[in-house]
Length: 323
Image 1 (cartoon, rainbow, N blue to C red):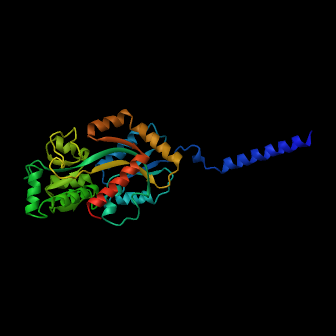
Image 2 (image 1 turned 180 degrees about the horizontal axis):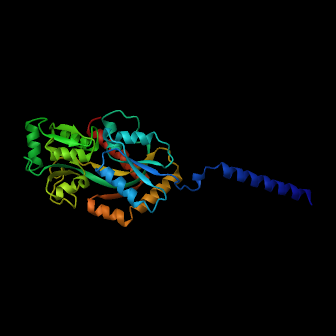
């Protein structure tokens, strides 16, 4: 055999060996990732609220799409920041997510110091909904409309009380912005979640409460709760007779966004898998039925677009409250 051909063959073998070693050294998820253990979705609010319902409905809808269980875990407190902190501290391996985009990522950091940066500590995966804040009262409340509530609040500072889902949360932020825009002073009463805030309203512990439409819809439909105004740019189709604050001359419009978020540093193949499979879950009949019945305003965005909305909302709230 020609020595040159032997050298060439050895060179080929060496190249092949190096390529094989490089392949073995490359992480498996750089090529493809499929979960092999349960995925946990943390919820920072009590069971029954919008974030909790979204997490559970997504887990149900994903049952035949994702080959491992999707488990919902409520870690309640600090307007969602406790759950957010747990995810910020978690390993970015695709197995720990939380329902974010609202209080824990757009408003709480404007009111208190957090152990995470709402704009940098997470990898947004997929946005699923948005909901304007609604201020509602009991059906038998003394306020005929929103203007009547504002008039009483001007005459008697801190006499009119309102409930929210927690100190620094998106609904608390909405109340603070309302105060700044109108010159009134309300009495804020924070609760652990939407269900607790709504129960306080029904029980007469507060005069009004802020919440999302899908959280209030059952009480509105049965006539126990009366919405006075919504804090959005346009009226909701489900509440055509409820004016926006902008129509009443008060420029306050804040959406409570919801979506799935993971720890920062999530590898691209893992992000792609989670986005694509939960996107498929949103296209199932089960999810569509939930959206139709709950009054949820579905609003899809991919991770990059969701991230931009979070950063923009965080800045807007900070500016509005004069941080």
